Length: 314
Image (cartoon, rainbow, N blue to C red; front, side, top):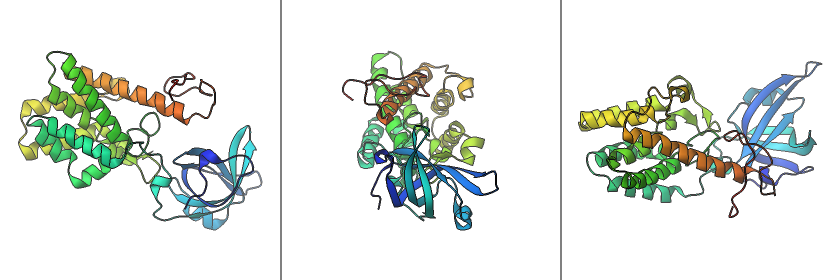
């Protein structure tokens, strides 16, 4: 049971068997040959650097990225930054990850109910396809838990589903605004475009990119799953081609990882909906995470390369 969050740490805070996740681990050796560990601790409130001098052998044996640990130590000021000087730590099997990783502000039940509503609003054969893929019990559990990214936007438990629902809502609105848009195709693309991220990030390892994510990637994984489901349902070939193009082109450029560029109206819209939602949520995520008490963030965000001004209502 956690008694203090990283966001609550200050210089002089004493930690006794406090639960944290090892987000980064780097083994080093002092000039006289003694081993020490530099690491980044995290919980759902944030992250903090840490160092463990004179590491005992029993700690060396199990310490790795993604491990939950009970940390004992003291918080100090190191180069104007909080750092935890660890004096002991022990592994925790099967931790409650909701205590250690950030999660969507929306409940999983609420988002799953919205997902079902959106799917039920689709005409055929799109409703059958999305039901077959997304409402499969085993896959829905993964889809509702995965992050949409590691840190840039929606980088938290439930982030993938939240991002997909937001995009589907925007897609429906834009389809009503612009003529000649296949609304069901566009909304289906919004729901399915990033579903390969269930295989790209490991929740158990603090959202680390998996081997599958590095070697295959979420675009390929999504297309494979769509084509498999389409074959099982005898889904119309031309509809499948249009949908696969949306998924393949949603990054917009080959430089950003898409194997092709948008060449249909729906693909153009999906790419910009994805960009809009990721940038807007990335802005909000960064501003919320910044500890500055002024109207401007204390540091530049990686996404925008500049300090950001807080919305007056945030």
